[in-house]
Amino acid sequence: QLQLAESGGGLVQPGGSLRLSCVASGYSLDRYAITWTRQAPGKEREGISCISITHISTDYTDSEKGRFTISRDNAKNTVNLQMNNLTPEDTAVYYCAAERHAKCRDVFVSSGLDYWGRGTQVTVPS
Image (tube, rainbow, N blue to C red; front, side, top):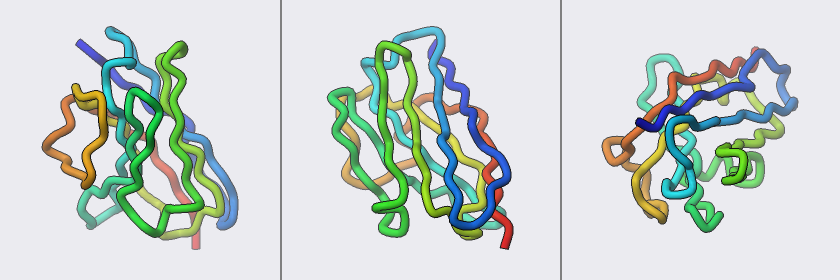
């Protein structure tokens, strides 16, 4: 079974950057579209960005456009999320998830994702 593990979270000051990584084990990632999502306290889970097996990315929110960049390295079985110019509103637990599909959905559908990591906490103090 595919297993995902996120890393790279932490405490960062406003305006700072973090690079999250999602590493897969059990199976190769090259058959899965990978989505980064996040959930802030008291809020619903939201999709951030997805990357297809052919490295085409789909952004699900406007606020992260230009600040967050998703990328994948199939040889390393890894998908990364580079986050720049972080704000307190970015504080959340960040999850990566895999869908058994080559392409990303046009809109974020949480129930359509087949495998999930346990998440990594990102905290940006106000």
